[in-house]
Image 1: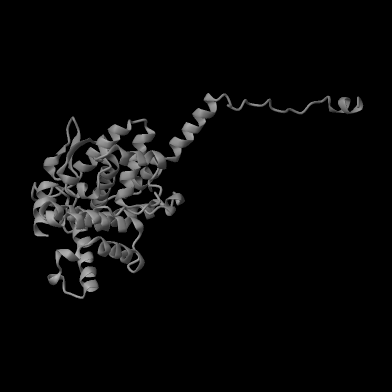
Image 2 (image 1 turned 90 degrees about the vertical axis):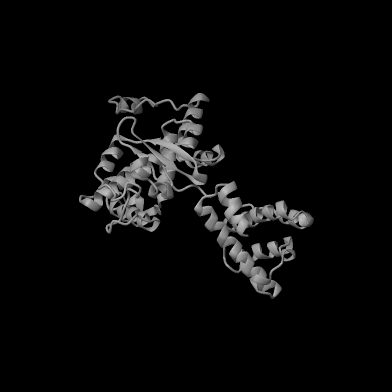
Length: 323
């Protein structure tokens, strides 16, 4: 276990802290379930106990007893598979036992539409920010999230040295697996960032709370919900959205698609590992589907011709008399 987390995940795969925590939680649950099943403590578990039957039983347990969704079940399986592959590399005599675990299929799930805000809704949320020192931070934060489409972990890690506030205006972001990418910044975002007080240490994050400590994920979520609630007073349609930092990332992707930006460019802009992830936004975007349908209708020669407008005529009585 120690070599799996410290050597394989961190050094070989370069996994993010989020991935490491997710794998840690999944394997912890699995070993606790396994110990209860075989009637021994976790310290007394043996490699022979890690078999396909126990993994299938655990996956059924997380769905039926813990109430987890099929998506969560598949995430737990991914962690167990990764650990099993590590075992296979170091324990060849049990290869058949491990191969049976690796052959367990993921469960088919229903792809839900990606939640996002239309550009008008995103602008309404940003415009709802008031005045004051805290408002200046909130405005810079919302603009930065929407401008870059960055993950909240990437935003919270931005330091002064990552920003280039003169031409070319840009920011260096550090994504999953320590991957770097550069995103351009709007003049409005630059102006909002310049209004922020500089952190006491240049190596400290630029987004900070009222006490001067680095902002947290929960802090970002609270700020977004607060301004969405305020904006919903003038824009009631916002009340049907549950807006999180990742929803603003989706909103950025959809706005880029609606602007005609190529999918491969958006993939690099958002830091996706595969263009297949970016393609999910195309299936979600109703505006693009509407435009495609209109273009198809016109191309098929079915464009509706405007009818002649009816006007009252003084010859009505004459027409009736002629009948």
